[in-house]
Image (cartoon, rainbow, N blue to C red; front, top):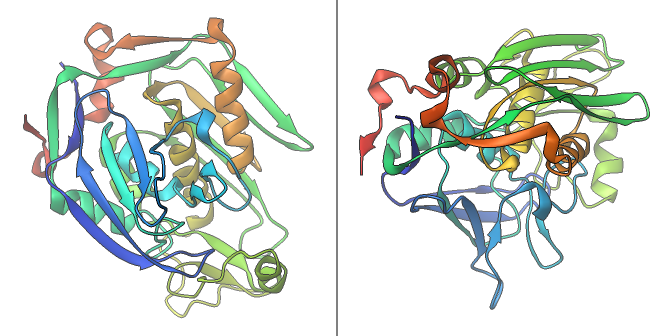
Length: 306
């Protein structure tokens, strides 16, 4: 039986928020079955706990934000992506600032943290969201859709008028091992020419070559270059996984996106949840082996039982 997971012990990490520019400490705590992922702002007096799901998403400009106003947690997508990548369902996240630290701009630091902290299997079966019929959302020339599949597959296409990116497509078949090896290290990216406009909006105050791929008009500025030839579309897949994890369960469905972003991902989640005929929630114990075996962790990371 494939059971729910949490982390083995409390762990903290400190870094800079890419948009706020503020130093912040994030502390992760183990949680019981069916707890989900919840955030608590420890720097906001009497702040209510924020449950991470598609309905609690507020702003989606250049990041995914849980909550709104003073009691909000910004840029949750990379952390949530890493949780999904390890099949972790239940974590209590305390944070003493407005934004999850960006670390190196990918999920790599969180992947390392979760490897070192360890994974615990809880005494309750995972639940899967099984897609039964296609759901699609469109905004201008951008679109995203989800349709039936025995496992999570993401077919992502990005298009940028830049000679280094141009059009990139990748089809990613999810497994915990594939996520760790192929997706977790892909960094966020941005254009040098957009920096001033973004800063005027109060964004990327903490952005640097240490936490993003930066491109001038012709090339990648970072001296170390790219981690993958197609790192840009891989990062889009990382973001997509973080955003669709807000459906609250492991997912059996194929997601296809064209020029998508956080807003479109959230619209897709909300439309799916608003279409009861399009999905069902079932216990992992009732599913075919190929659906659940994607969540097998590499042997060295196999969860202990709790």
